[in-house]
Length: 257
Image 1 (tube, rainbow, N blue to C red):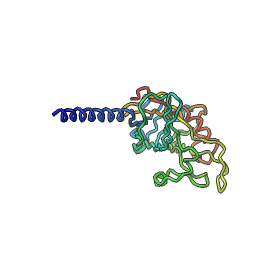
Image 2 (image 1 turned 30 degrees about the horizontal axis):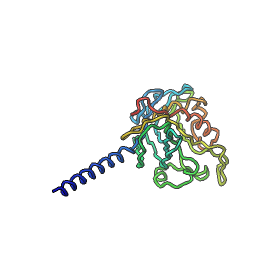
Image 3 (image 1 turned 90 degrees about the vertical axis):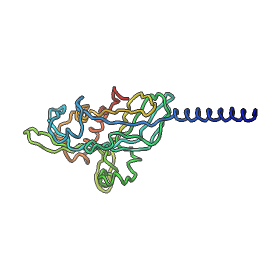
Image 4 (image 1 turned 60 degrees about the vertical axis):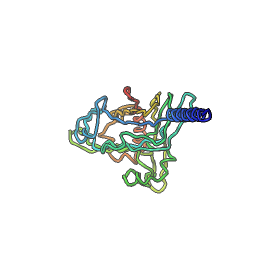
């Protein structure tokens, strides 16, 4: 009887230890989701607001949004010791079709407070040189004569010109290129890092990223759609201006979960 009692004690201890271990393992890491929302100087923008001329940019032109999709990659979590957890992933945020507005990487992140969470807008040059079948099928690629690779963003719409006539614009961002053709050259990198700041990761954290679309047309380059409207991909000066304006587009929502 004593032997049986001892066996039961050991079995109970073993079960309790295993349960505790599993609980610890479950609490060590968690999934995280990036949720992308869009606004125009604080006014919420969704696909239901597209195709209506209703927004006014900093230069005074009224415009509509007809298509908006952009690429983010290399989500990075930086801890208090300045150590980085880099997720080699990408996601297309397709506002037009309500796809990719929430993105949950398969890799779980250790719970805790991170001094910064960041991502790359577009692809860095190494990632941009690879071949992605899904992006190819989505017509997100860039012609070889413009350096190949992929769009960082396609932002299309209509605007009212100086005569109040509707005209189209294609605000497309890519890797800045000169000398289109057989031997293009690249004057400057135009992907950029978006730093969101401190984030606490716990169970199923949602990081809400706000994109103020008005900022693309605002600062430091006041955007005149009467001058810069279409055929901007082979215009390296325009691409660099877009890169500069994009620095203030994204931020961490104050109401992020």
